[in-house]
Length: 520
Image (cartoon, rainbow, N blue to C red):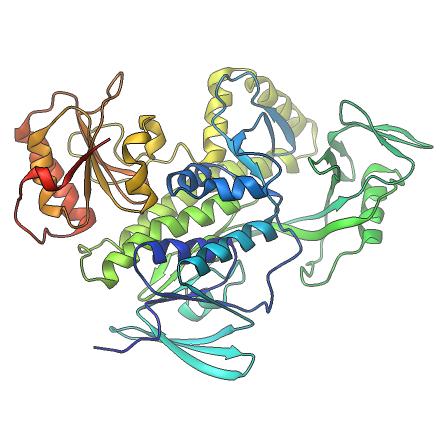
């Protein structure tokens, strides 16, 4: 057997890589994280994150540490930008999209702390330069502060961004397009001569009122909004025929020049906290796995819209971690690790649909495009359409394609669809799968007890029960559900097949339920 330096080598200490490391450690796997930047980032690439990952962090019992560091607790958001439009979710009594305002450097710091608390190792200033793999493992060449060295592991995962070196070394194609529009973004203090009105508009001395939200001109799009910390978020979007260099720092002067071109206004800008320039891409890796090399986050997909990348990347990590752990520990069924690509590429493709729709909405500048935006905005006054759109942004509409012999609508869905959390809290805190018995089904508990070393068995009751029992994976997706009143003749084989598919063959015979069933 090969002696390894780590179970998994992770390239990239952004939110995806650190989330993957934390999840692997929770599963008893030894990761080493390699990050080419020598220090934690200080410039925020994002101001917060939203979507299903917030519920997952709650299940893990760590959401409160992120909330305590943010501007507010994670809560349903009343409004969000979509394709240059302002979408208002406030008419819905329970908006499907939750958000937490937390600058990305602080998010990465908290994830770094979580990894280290669990005994993980993050090496900063270390860059992956080469990878060799065979049937037994991988050897990774690294350039570190003290010179080159090698690490060995069972797997390597590239969480190293859209220009992923790991993806390149694996030879994984990354097809798609780069949009010509250049976005310039600044978080700035309110300057002298600018007054923020109660409705969010800006009163600019010598000019007049600049409205909050999006202003479209024949030269581009200007957007401005107030942040919770008293700063202004200012952005311009202009088309260009030349490639932009993301590595070239943007200046406050460059942002001001862009505002002048787009809006025709000399807008005074205060002290900048963040300045960035970027172009949108719509790309998805042809495969998320090449042997023992895998990719996640921006290394696997980039979307032409803001507000979805962190959610998608961190959920990649949660989906992958428990599958890697099962494979490394020798208890994975055939095809389990391949299901990572099947499921997360499916989710990415779904996210690509609504983000490319946003690109179409914001890029058109002829009367037909304006008519489309007007019609789209009118459709969003209908609650069902508004709810569907919010769920798409959150990733709450994702149902993984998985075996479902009885056709139960919960199979493949995220646990929130069941609207029952208390009965599985501790199991999901520990990233363990659980069979949740909702109808006192001793026959199903007896089946699950054969997997009692790796699957928790819990009982609960709920009003308006939609299933007799559900099998919940560590990533909080439902692997199987028994129809209400389903006979043992069909329910038992279905449960047994699901347990084998997702958690391998049983390692012990059936034992008394007294020692393995936990009631909440």
